[in-house]
Length: 318
Image 1 (tube, one colour):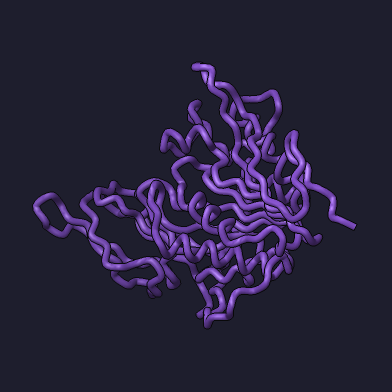
Image 2 (image 1 turned 90 degrees about the vertical axis):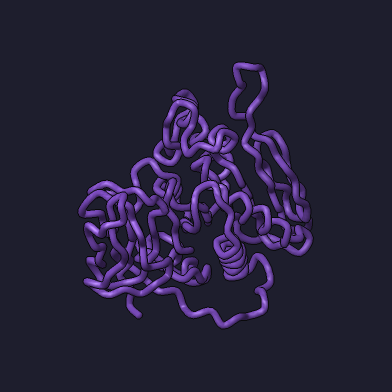
C-alpha cells in the first residue's frame, strides 16, 4: 500500500516527492503578501517526521545555506519519513537584514504564540501548528548575536536520553547542556513532546565554510541515526566534548580590544586571552580566563566598555 500523503497548509505532498509550500503570514501595506517558505520532502517509505529551521533571527543567515545544501542532497524516492525544511522563519527580519521583526520583537521569545496576537505571536503560532505539531524531532539553526562569533556547537537537554543521543549523533565539536528560555521555540516544542537540538555556529550576516559544512554533515548524521537516509562514509571525527557550564569573560575596563585567543582554543584559569589599550596604543588592562575550558564564543567588536562580554568559555572534560 502506498504511503499516505503529507498535509501542510492547504496542500498535500505525495509520498516519494518534494514540494515547496507557501504558508501565508500577512499582507504588506503595499498590498504584497508575505508567506513562510517551506520545502517538504515526503519519503516513499515511512519514518520519523523532522523539521529543520533557520533565521528565526533575521540576521542569522547561516541556517538558510545549511538547509539549502542539506535538501540538495536528499532524494525523496530514497528517503524514509518526512523532512519539513523552513530556511527562513523570520521572513520580514531576513529581508531587512535585521535580527528582529518590524515591531522590534524577538520572534524567539514569542512561542507558542497566538492566532490573534502581535505579528511575532502570529508567526510563532503558525510555525507551531503547521510545522512543530506534525514533527517529533527538530533542529533549529542559529548563529552568534551581532558582532560575535560562535564555535560550531549543539545545545539541548543532555539529561534527556533521546536528546542526548541526537546530540551525540550530530557530532559537533561541543555539545552544551542548556536550559530552555521562556518563549523560545525550543521550550514550546519540548512542551508538546518534540526533541530539539539547537545548532549554533558562526556570525550574523556572514557565511563561513566551516559552520555550514559542520551543520549540513551534522543534520545528515541525525537523519541517518533516525534511519531516514543511508549513513555517509565514516570519517574520524572525535566524540563531541560535553559542557554543563559556561560563562563569558567580561571587560574590566574600557578600551580597544586585541584578542590573542581563537574559537576552539583550550584555555586555563588565569591564562592571558588578550588586552585592552587606549587610542594611543598604551596597554591599560589584560584579559584573562576566569575558568578552564574551550572557547566557544568571541566578540568581534574592537571597542569595548566595562562589562562587555569578550570570550565565552565552556567547561569540558578533555
